[in-house]
Structure formats: structure tokens, C-alpha cells
Amino acid sequence: MRIIEAKDYQDMSRKAAHILAAQVTLKPESVLGLATGSTPIGTYDCLAEWCKSGDLDFSKAATVNLDEYRGLDHDNDQSYYYFMNKHLYSRINIDPSRTHVPDGTQPDPAKESRRYEELIRSLGGVDIQLLGIGHDGHIGFNEPNSFFDGDTHCVDLTEMTIEANKRFFASADEVPRQAYTMGIGTIMRARKLLMIISGEDKADITAAALCGEVTPQVPASIIQFHPDVTVIADPAALSKVKR
Image 1 (cartoon, one colour):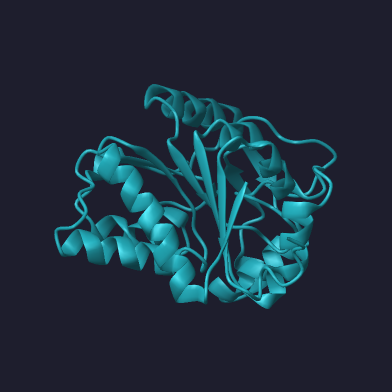
Image 2: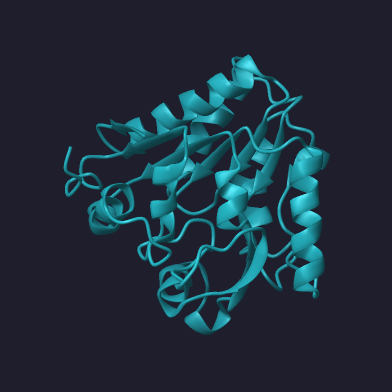
């Protein structure tokens, strides 16, 4: 595992964007695994800026997103498809048909889970997967559990996750209670992992995930077993990591 300490959020965002940009430059047909949430927005801003200036070309790339709320369609402004289109897809020269997010409107969890796994395999697998980390250690929507979930599946969101995400909705009651998410196995099959972390509020879980016991109670801790991981975090997030 390679841990890079960034100066601040902006520096973290630029460093992560450089890694993703290098991936696309060296392999234009790359399959990028992407994430939502507030943490990657700065990274997406950098990628969009470099694409606009002509320094980066996404025309042959494909993307697959980690997760999507169950029950929300693409037009819902709280769906993760909407988020990705707003912050990245509409700002770069990527073919919309090559941008993929789980289908939140699919009522059959088993069917959608199989479809998404088959889609990822049909693309040749994920070249690099961008990850954040939740306050409870979740990656994607893989919540603390007694075991590591394998493939894409439907998950019941914990109260901590609902509480953390309610700021995006009118009230906590409007936050979906379920989501489709890549499983831990799906994530770990990516050829490279890139995790970005920012803020003092993530210091405890960052230390647990990067330096603690590998346990499904801290889902992100599994990345310790991946052969190619880069973590970029600001000083506040790394303040409790012993190096």
C-alpha cells in the first residue's frame, strides 16, 4: 500500500486526478471505477478542466460506478447517475453509452446484481477503482457486517449512513433505505485501487482501515490485501495513522 499525504483537499484532488488521467492517457480504453459523495468532486473538477483544455481524452474510456440508491431513477436529482452526470459525464467527451451505474429502478435485486456483474466482466474488468470511505468504514455501500460481501448486491443501509446522507435530502425520511452496490469481491478484482480521504472526522476510521485488523466490521480494511493500492489523504485524515 502506498500512502500519499496531500497538503489539503485541493492537493488531494489534484493528485488523485493525475493518477486517473495517467491511466486514461496510457490506456485510452480504460475502464474506470468511479465513486460519488463530496470527497471526489474536486477530483472530477480537475479531470473536467483538463478534458476541456484538450489535455485529456475520454472518448474511448468506459466507467462503472460503485453504487446507486434503490428506487431512484436517472432523472432524480439525488440519484448517483444524476450526480455523476452533473459533476463529470456532461463535462467530458465520454460516450454516454459507456457510462454505467446500477439501475436503481430494477425491482429484482438478484437480476440487477447479476446484470451489473456481467456488465463489468464484459468490459474486461475495472482498471482502476476510485474509493472513498464512510465514517463506519464502508466502501461503496458495503456496510459493517459479519462477513465480506462478494459480488454486486442489494444492501440495507445503516442508520449511520442514512444520517450521513440526509444532508442531501429534504429530510432523513426521504433517504432511500436500500442501495445496489459493488461487493467487496467486485471491488477487490479491480487491477488498481485509489482511495481518497479528507477531514479530521475521518481520522479514526482511516487509522482503523489502513493500520488495524482486517475485518468485515471495517469493510475498507480489506484493501490491505490488494496488491496495488494508493491512498491519498490530507494531514487531518492521516493524523492518527502511525507510519
